[in-house]
Image 1 (cartoon, rainbow, N blue to C red):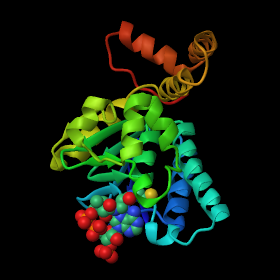
Image 2: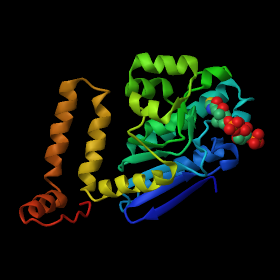
Image 3: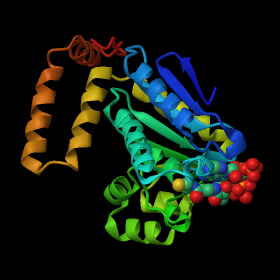
Image 4: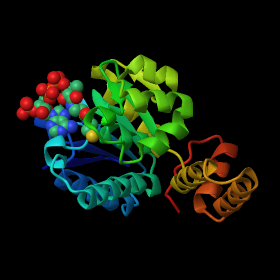
Length: 257
Ligand code: COA
């Protein structure tokens, strides 16, 4: 299977599994990833998702160059829109996605990591948008999401040069939140996923939605949206449970209702 999905309690882990080509995405792989995301989005038991790559060398080394080489412009457009679809499915998912970047995250691999809510990297990770070295421009959101994440100055440099950024520099630039030894990466990602999953799922999910809007709308519109979703949280059982548990000095048990 090009994509593996494992569940552990309220956390799911998606593993990109084409290690022979450093988990590069062909159409089948990309489509399987989209289906896995859609299935998890419909699964109310899952409250956080970790996305990682099989093996110890790569998260994903990008779109499959062997498959892409002979594409016509119209096929390339379709492939770009397919990649956009996967990235938007991650962003629209009710659960936060943590990319556990365990090696190369290049081109489409970097773009899919950029669509995740949080990126954690191993010390051997390297991120980048090398498309211009292949005669193409980024096609799965790199020009937009990298720019939003690190600002236009750094995004322009990285995209125009195609330079790979090692984990420590990626952390300094804000491309990844933290860097761990490779052997610890998955346990750190799981620890973070479980701490998210212990919180009220509707509140987390609505927070994700509001944060996603922050960069797309002007401040007043964003604040109005925030006030509405804040108010809607007061219509949940979990709000009553969370506040009662605090006042009764016990741990809250959230049910997602
Ligand atoms: N598409 C298709 N195959 C890829 C690939 C990609 N994006 N990235 C790596 N592979 C394949 C290689 O062709 C090689 O296959 P082979 O063993 O059958 O020859 C295998 O994965 C291992 O890669 P290799 O290049 O031998 O490893 P390396 O350690 O020398 O270099 C990278 C690793 C990631 C630096 C290098 O593979 C690379 O630059 N890949 C392309 C990255 C890229 O440009 N991505 C953007 C695409 S839009």
